[in-house]
Image 1 (cartoon, rainbow, N blue to C red):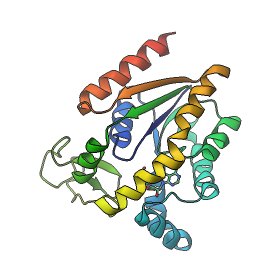
Image 2: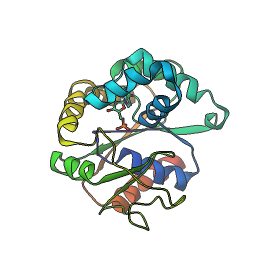
Image 3: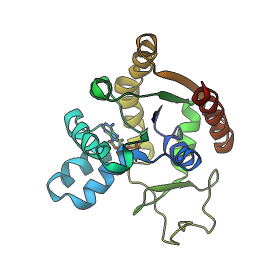
Image 4: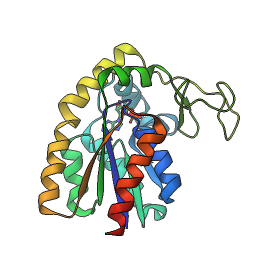
Length: 219
Ligand code: AMP
């Protein structure tokens, strides 16, 4: 059973690398941000709260996201493993996972601030599926159109300079401490932790992750 967590700052390439890894290893993925964006569309009751929080660049409430993730990972397709993108983002979320879910690999995508801004600036999304592109670094086959459906790509509302600075602050305060937390976990249980240089090209990062995982999947 392969359960992988992809950890990193906003714009570090979590979503892109998750999609590539999912295809390569045929493991389904769960994106916390995507679950929340779908909730905005489908859940009238929570729509306002999620939208407001995301558009401020703040993290949603721990108990709120934990409830959604808990429900999601119980779905049949995730029984044999999954890749988690964007969860956990706080110690409380990590503690929830650690309670009864055995995680095998933590992949931390390490990136410089200047590259974060670059990545976010050019990011495009296919809203119905959550597929992401980058105008220059990962362009769609046809300009502004999704490769699979041909539907229009848009820019995420929270991908702007003002909101990103709050998102980075939230990351520094709540998510970055998880790196030490997970490193400590590797001492007492079988979690393996890898740091990947995420300032490289998408393909190079992908190859670096695969190398690490392949070596360790064999052992
Ligand atoms: P992402 O698509 O991963 O960039 O997430 C977009 C936004 O969704 C974040 O800026 C947060 O507002 C919210 N979000 C995503 N994942 C989490 C999480 N694990 N905990 C709290 N908020 C989250």
